[in-house]
View (cartoon, helix red, strand yellow):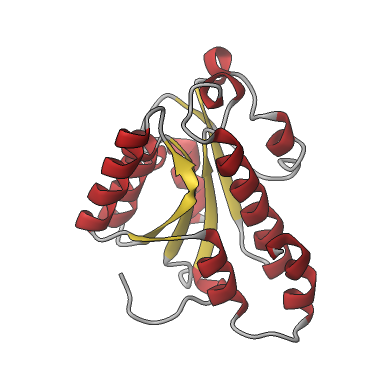
Length: 185
């Protein structure tokens, strides 16, 4: 990971698999959904590109309703791969980003499976994974915690949504800050 603060032009938000059938089994699902919604709203305000995925939509369904309503115009390839970047359509979307995009901000489920494997895929591509700790989870708290530990071990940055949003905003008083503030309270 880089030791400099992030800038919006260097990032994209990647939403992984917060689907109805899966989220029913996830540890702290409400917190994860609220955080993903906050990240989507703020990414749109700040101007960060957003990519999303579903995992075998035929079996796991649409995103939870609170997130499904935010997905218009967000590309969302369906995948069977656990590493979202092993999916050809997802990888093609990333290749359309300018070379300045070097960091993926990851939210979704499950921390120890799809989030972890996607982070590994990002590292293999020379990109930086930034995992939003309160925007990811697993079916068990143990797997969530072990997943975060492993992500840190391989070099992913891990921290809360508020930390990354304020880092991307960089200062108060701007139009983006004022628009994002209601989502941060």
